[in-house]
Length: 452
Image 1 (cartoon, rainbow, N blue to C red):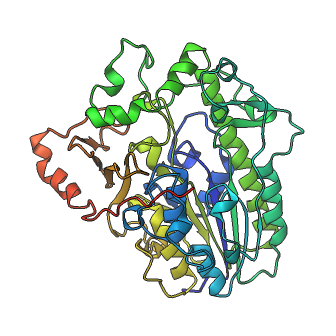
Image 2: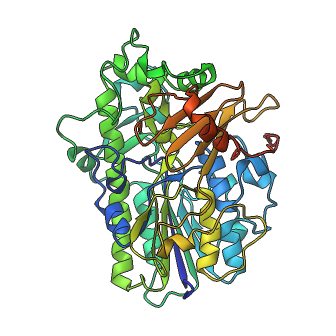
């Protein structure tokens, strides 16, 4: 295998499986994600280790599972586990290996406190754009600023665009030993992007796949009928957004705004791919595109991420460029696997710190079996001593969720892709459920102390 000479590391915040290569929403418009998938390896069953921004990004960038570090929640900061300046992240280790490292946007968690200047040759960190309230829901005080949505003027240049251009300017035809990282903030809330992206969705908007009729009718108990007590607790913590949107008649507008935000991020990805084409960098550059977790828009009445169901955990993951064949693989994988894979493709020794698997064998043989499952963690009180864990184990055909109180869910994705029928009490599945239980980590690190 010829070692990759450059790495292009692309993350898109809060992007679920509503992208063309993964099916997703029937109206999604992602030609550039499709373009990348057609020249690389598409992972059809890739999952986040945690359905929250900071712990998922920390696990991905440091290559360690949350249950090994105790970093479970957005309140947890990586530098309370890994010393600042020690270059223990994927980026810092690449710099120690001789790469020049350039970053822009949301790569680690958003604030400057989550970045380590020692990791980067140069970094372009801009504050997120601020907007006046747009939606009726926000004006009525029902939800906070981060749930706002709507179009801004076409001539408004958002920081995602500035960051994209900044990264493109650092790429050149003779690049070698370069690590370029771009983190696009949209489609994170607020779903505010230029008007032209809303204009792409000017017809009737379809419901999210798998949602039933009268989803938000208070007398309709079916969306949560199959959930154990702890599952209902998880779902209802973020159900108020859907109720507010429904009551204000803005639910379909909200979906439109999410689709517009995805289209906006996809267009910016297109700028980077155009730059790769222009500079003829595909033969010596390994590209990876990923999202930190999925996003829910009413499944089981819940919204945002913060659960262990498919729409919250399934993410786009594509490798392309140097050393990668074109194809698709259905092998279940985790974002934890990105770091060891990049090191393998660059012929660098694997740090003991990494707990993921090297996905490189799938680049040339997508039908190969590796670990065979992806584990994700969530729960309640995750940043306190009263922490209670819930664990998801996803294999190619099934998902098993075990909650802190012993309640559990088991879904057969071959016949139930939207996880409507909880089969945890089906005796014919006892052996399969037991095999999934065997995949749950034996030890759980206590949550790290939240420091001010």
